[in-house]
Length: 543
Image (cartoon, rainbow, N blue to C red; front, side):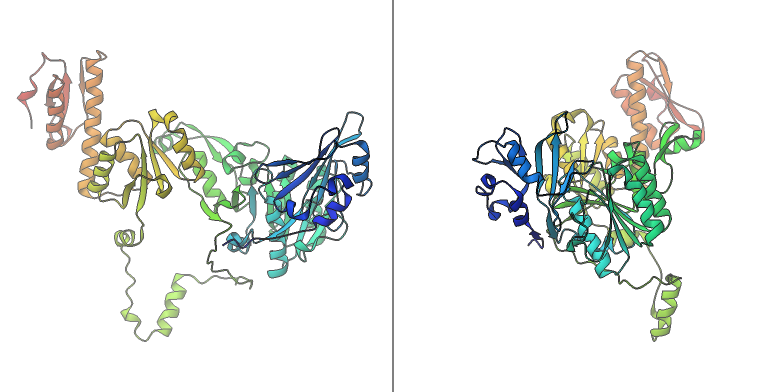
């Protein structure tokens, strides 16, 4: 059940509309409406959140209709915006080349509560939060509710830097929706950065709320605020964190990027090029929240880690939360954090003081048992990847995973790289649900096993599993060598040293392709030499 509640002052907006428009609408019609649109020479429109448009059955808009509205509201500012005092409604003007108003957009402002219930725990951590999302998904609504939460429930000193009176409404008195938060109005959008700094220097805030950081100067002002220890809650242009990283104007909000040249060893360890992109500094915002739609949020709780993962091409999955779901959080109290946070030893010593027989406590830790006990099974959805091979890999390596035929149940998607275009619908569904997607190049056992291990973040294998890995790598090397010889690129190739058991398999593989194979070298350096038939017979040495 949704816990959202909505309130508006729709009557005050209807009062300024021409009579011919007023007669055709009622407050009930506007429950889900976003805005009125009145353009000269066209019939008035009502636009709704689902994209639907109602064209009112009235005569076209005239100059008198536009004059009727503009005469009842304050003068438009330099950004062509005005409002109705004491409400959240916004009226924006469209002008012709001579400056005459030829169109009006009357945005319906609402007080919607309950939109931050699912992230209340994050708002109370004293960390800076950045919201990303397309226009109309509710960024400003969330800022408004967070302002009230932090000012009224946490009793912090909150200052809203309110450009165009978007957050706290028009007029000199802030709208009650922001609680006891103070509001600093911004005369023109280009002065927002100056008012941000002024707020910090003059009014000793603990929290600053800013809507739409859009320029490099504003990004620098945000960093200045954060570095002074002030909690910053803001929105920015951009739909996703990845978009923001690539935006040269605003990338500083998440730490900025720089080109770095790696040493040979480091490049080899990373399996990357020598020149890579790295995060330049600590992000301004500790948490980034993507607003996917009005009901869905994707949360990156550690911005620095998320940016590093994205720059290195590693898969990362944000936490998805739904506004209409109820989450049971252990909300921290608003009491000050002590100077020294107790560590593990302190807690153990406290236990020793309170428990009658502390010697009965065993503080041994088995990593393997821990993983086996608490690591949940992962469900893997396959696209154009051999199901039988994947199931064999999972069974043989005894992995905590299973194959699912329903992408809605999946935690991970593994797809064949050559069939990506055909699976556009499947992959777009996976991306929308923020599922990690991994790609295989071929349907070979070695390739599928490698990708599954990568998907499940498996780095340690037992002796039996290690043998299988080494064997498959050796056979892959053998196949590559055979292909080169059959293609005429080389007449003979020497492979890497292997154990007797693996060399036997390599001999058999060479025989299947009618090639000669000979074991050469001594001891640990014993390895195969492959050549065109006519050289030393492969049967002369199988040891």
